[in-house]
Image (spheres, one colour):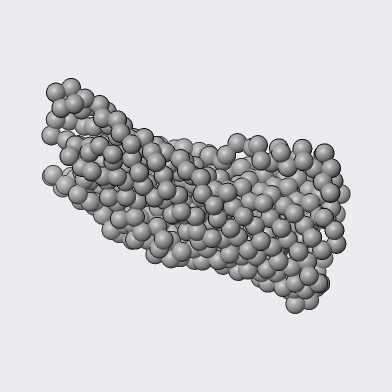
Length: 414
C-alpha cells in the first residue's frame, strides 16, 4: 500500500507546470527527458536505478530499487538564418530567427511494489516546438510565430517475470496547446492573424526488455499516436472598419502526434563501463496536413488549408557511460536524426532539416541521490521551403542552424 508520503510525492509530480515548447528532435519531437539522457544522445533505455526510465523505456523501471523521485530541466537555445525569394520581383531577402530559448522539464516517480511489480508516473513532453521570425519580413506571410506546447502524463505498470524478461504498459494523458501567427498581405494592407487553442487526448505505450546474459540486453518501446481535435480562437487585426473591422471567430482543426517504435541494445563491458545503441522510427506520415476551418469566413476564405505530407523517419543514437569512481560517472553521446520534411510540405513553423547531436555529461551519485549536468550541441541542416499561394515568397531556404543545450537532473532515492 502507498503511504501518505508516497501520495504527496505523486501529487507533486502531477502538479508540475506543463513544459514549454522547445526544438529538440526532427519535426516537433522532443527526447530531452533528462540530463543523463541528453548526455548519452537519447540512448538511455537501460539505465540502472533511474526514475527517468519512465520516459526512455518503461520496462526498465524494474531497475529502480525501492522508491525514487526525479526532476530534470533541459535548456535549449536554437539559432538559424534564412533566404527567401520574393514572388513579385525575384529579390532575395535574408533574415534570422528570433531566438526563443526554452526549458524542457521532466518529472518522474517510481515505486517498487514488491519483488516483481513496479509503479511509475511521469510528466514530460514528447512533442513541442517554438519558432519566431521578424514580424515585418517576407516569411511572415507563412508564419512569424509558432508554438506547440506539449505535455504527457504517463502512469505506468511494470512487471519483472524472471531474470531475463520484464515488460511495462502505460496510459498517456496528452496535452497540446497550439498558437500560430502570420500576416496576410491584402490589397488594402497587412492583416496580422492569430490562431490559438488547446486540447486533451489519450494515448498509450508498451515496452519489453530481454537480457541475454549479465552483459547484453535488448529492449523495444511502442508509443501510440495521439490525435487532437482542437477548437481554437481566430483573430484578424488590421482590417479597415469599412470592410468590417477586426475579425474574431472560432477555428477548428486536427493535430496528429505520430506513433513511434524504439529499439535498443545495451552492452556492459564490466561493472564500470557500458554502451547503448538506439534506433527510433517515427511515423511522421500521420502528419499529413494542418487544415483549419473557420465558423465565419475570413477575407472570403472558409479556412486555411496546409498540406504537409511528411515522410516517416529514423533517429539513431549511441551513448556510453563510465564510472570514474563510486561517486562520479562521465557520459557521452551522439545522435543522427533524419529529415522527414519534403520541399512542398515545408514551412516556417518547423523550418529545420536533419540533425546531429553531440553531448557530454557528468553525474554525481551516492546511496540517496544523484545529480547530473550536461552540455550539448545540435548541428541542424537547412531546409528548402516551397512558397504556396498565400506566401509572399516563391521559394526559401534556411541555413546556419544550430542549438545549444544544457541539462540538469536531480534524483532522490527513498
